[in-house]
Picture 1 (cartoon, chains in turn green, orange):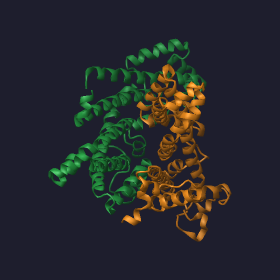
Picture 2: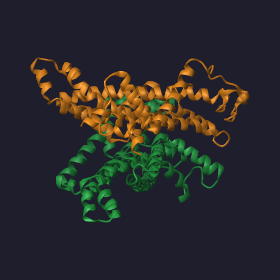
Picture 3: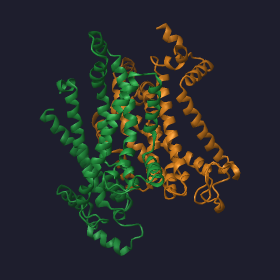
Picture 4: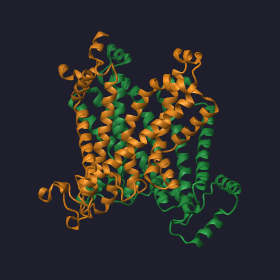
Length: 307
Length: 305
């Protein structure tokens, strides 16, 4: 990973972020009254006028844009109406929760997928393969919010062994993690199984077998290392998706992360909060993408040489 | 080579249908998927024909539990908090959920195909702009783009379809552009150009037929994803708005009765899962059927094992 490559990536990521923020700025002004984004639908005319002056919306659009650009450069996203604190502060408090939740869920999903995906590939065509295939298809197709509600129904309402929602000790993490990892797990099992089947039939695996390497060594060292590359790419994409928060799962369990913050911000029309969330999520995604690239180069020597 | 040809479908229509049928029976999961989708389709048609006589409110049947035939077959899956039969509501929601998913996929297919072909064939500043914008859309989590879009433009069916289409469009643009870049250099395109054919004529008659199959495969994989996504947005209250109904919205409406009437939230979600899974399984099957090196697996499984 050369410095020039890193610089190019950084510049492009910044341009993408600036592009999105500017697009939001102008779309808000083109499609209607921005005050509508800050205030509830039934706000009085007086409140609207006061908000308009406070936000500088009585100025020409060009000056508004300069003002807004200056604030963005100073990382000042305004005050969250709902929390009555600087929006960036609220977001930075929620960010670690979301990152931890996503990291735990993805790690378990990845580990499980590598294990079950390779078992299915080694035993291709057997009943084990069929069961794993069916379960992973179901896991990839389940709506996460519904899975969350059903888990609450079974484990919290009926069995009363886990809390319905909230935040605190490890016990509050069990259900959100379980629901969040279902879909990545299902997708990754399919991918690992497919690429593992391909690797097991590849020439280098036949060579390794012919040399007399042990079966376990061939499967898990020679084949798996190659089969994991597509899975890592997909996990990287999933990690970027998760940076936006466990989204709906966080809402179902009342988990205080970015996803819940963003969705609440949207439903309660807290524009400062939405803007700050988008900004932080974009930065996290950028870091994840760079990390995935580095990991890829570490595992696959071919990538290192090409760069 | 001759063995592969013998297994390939012949060109006459009845023979081709018969072959497809054999390929379908050869894959039990695909067969189950087709059966489930037919049930859903039957539900939609029955609802449109008025078999459920509307979603009438009947307070006597409030939160009626499911699997009880003594109140008639319409109440077999129970009733919701207003006494409306759940079966009828599910059928009504099915047309919205599937219709929106199909409309969104077709929109992103058409838009992505057009933009991708323009970007691939002409390139230049316009092509660059198209690619940069789709990179930006792709660089952010899909949920975030969709939420921001619905926040800015307000939730409605049209906006929902547009937002779903735009979040998926970059994938189509990329694939279409990559394909066009390759096809554009082939000899028959040069020949057409030498004969004086205009760029749009070439795109329509020479390039589109080659690009189309890949794009259709991509679209078939996307239907399930978009449906799952729509259910999430409707669950959050940013998708379909009441009194219209979709499966995601039904889960949200049943959430409050989770402890007392579990079936209200359970069945709609189950319907989403089964339908998504069916679309996925069928897309898989479709891919294998269209792959000459793999399709023997479907028709000759019984003979080999």
